[in-house]
View 1 (cartoon, rainbow, N blue to C red):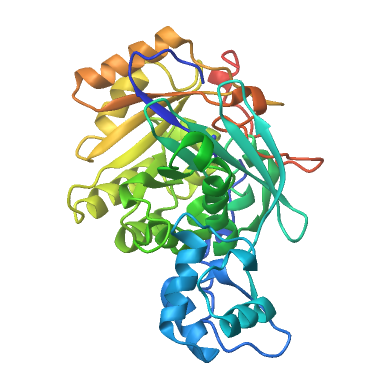
View 2: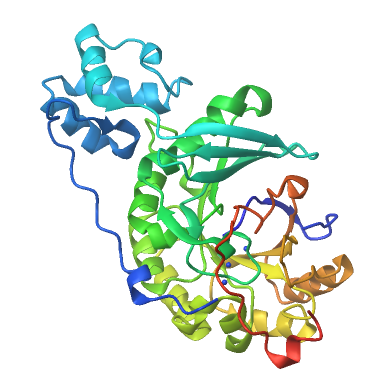
Length: 405
């Protein structure tokens, strides 16, 4: 998927991803729920950040300790500005409980490999996983006092969106709940002193979040827990390329915000640049959103629209977009395409983005233009990841768009 947003109203200065080959049904089947925590066998260890609070409390009880110790541990992990990563940081826990944790629990799921500094202040963190895989997380400060962390949900991505660098990788693995949550924890540990409070989370890094829906739902619930990381549900946004069954489940089970990467106004174009549309087309996707959002009070979906020169940025596209989202409470983010290695697309000129935006505004839509952030370190929207030698194939360009590319 993508990287990091900083959203501004329309006329701001502009600078500025999802995918090919039809995905198999196996790739889109729901993941199994992780089992409830059980008493540790000798030599076994648990990952603390992989548990929500009820699971953590049950596990602490199963080890023979009081529930009050579980809450103290929870606050050491996520609250009180501690964000513990080592046992010495578990202040206030009794000696026997700390020894049990030392023997049977792990506090860290990620290791910082590198931090890259972009010229605009954006930071890209490279994390190593236990198996040697690398994921990327982006932290974006803003002069308005908002700082956003963009987290990854997978190593690579199965969606093969044609404009997204991560999509070239294919899917390597799903991230665990702990690996997702810890990206936000690290952002606070590393940058709270420099940037102030990390206020927003967007699931717009590497991967299709709803393809890993069990772990994403659990991670986002930990992020908004009132005794934990305490993010507002309105400020945790989960993005998707359009997995319809998972969208229904997300809207029914979560109060976090949803962003749908639309990026086209016809099935012909979306089938090409986002192959998931061959399984869940525009009519099905938008019809599902209308039906599900109708059941939620004061809820608006974000539509992400990456503007590709000569592909989806015409006046007719703008008019069709107005018709497509009619009746759906929404906000629209226009995103300039960020080039990357092997890219076949070009960004829409700034003046044409403004023209496109104005057509939407004239019809009463709420529209933002997302500024590109961190592009000099490949940290901007659609630039994350490292495909390596194996890359998913690019799809055949429809004849009428070959000149534009």
